[in-house]
Length: 237
Image (cartoon, rainbow, N blue to C red; front, side, top):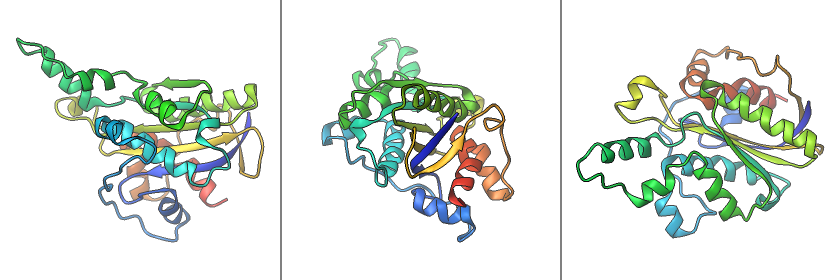
């Protein structure tokens, strides 16, 4: 399947957005891991912004980064949200609450507990009425999301926003799912246009290591990091 990359969004420690990531992936700047700054989603109203969980904020961060250079409006795009574990901090709080005698579950946590919470926030905030898919495929979540998004583009001949992201789980979940850092990548894919063309096949979905040891460590630290080889190819044209 052949699709075109219209725009890219990115966020990881040491790379706040796609512009800074592109410089690192091109070799124009060294990679220096630094904690991500706090981010306030621009599209969310203040009330929803306060209630948004960390995973939702990260999803908006990368999606809004991509939309800054996209030739499409957010309302025009179908969406695919791919996340291995969604927001594990909410899962932890819910399980903790249910283990207490009173079982007092926070209504906000319950509201945000569904796997497609970020997709719901985005569709409402962006006024996006096209189809939306939320999926999970453990460490292959980016590959699964890319395959889903590209298939939609080819079959429907319409553009798609793909957002892949995961945050750091709290203890004790971290012991069994050690995602070391928060990271996300967003791609706006189109059936044609001026963007870079990519071809999706079984071979392109295989894992490819990064030559730089620091970037290889980053690639393995988060399911979204599996996108780094593709992003480096796009950054270097």
